[in-house]
Length: 294
Image (cartoon, one colour):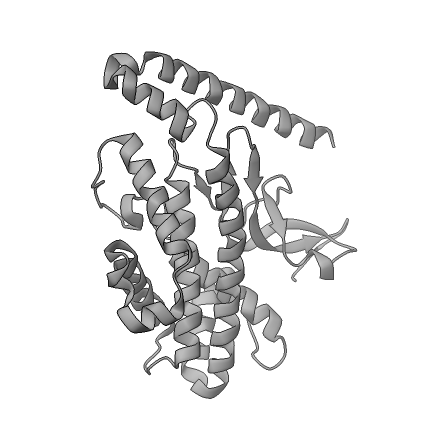
């Protein structure tokens, strides 16, 4: 408990320092970008206090993205039963660095978690980069205009449906989102060694997951500084302040010891709505005498 209080105090100090830095930046900003721009920054983007509306949308979107990726994993798992051993063996190879062995017949729930971890690695790769793509450049250099443009894109794409995509294609609504979908589809197909056309229900599940993750990215970059993502590696010590153990309901008599694999990344959220989205992990467990595998 004392350790938790210590970490919370550190977080509170960090938030206070961040707010002070933003106040100082906004005070001096009219010397750099003009008084009118400074006022827009405070009024529209909440430089002094992160825009509550954006944060509320962000927290909801993160939850929806996690759910949609899991639904995609369930749909993929159903397809694995019809694909034979090739894709299943490929997944087993991908999980070898984590010392994980899976069985489609014995524990399909665990397979969904592990598949979710692999897909989230693919979906959130380069999340921090402009345009969600490594080494890409910002098309809008003015910070205020860029944040406003990202939120406008979020508003436009939020209600986009599968039927509209079937009729007009993703490129009609957003070229950036269309390129993101193409890129992630190629990465996932290559990762799984998938060599046949995806049935429409699976394509729809992929669209929903891709759209949800893309909306998280748009919202994270609708404020400045952007809302940071954080990840943990295997072997990291479990920290309940930043991590949620997804296997804890099955291991009530044991304590999570170290991270086995990260299932979903977390996010730091700051502003008048202060929060943190914990990353989701699967752990190795220990009692007073030994360490047990999940």
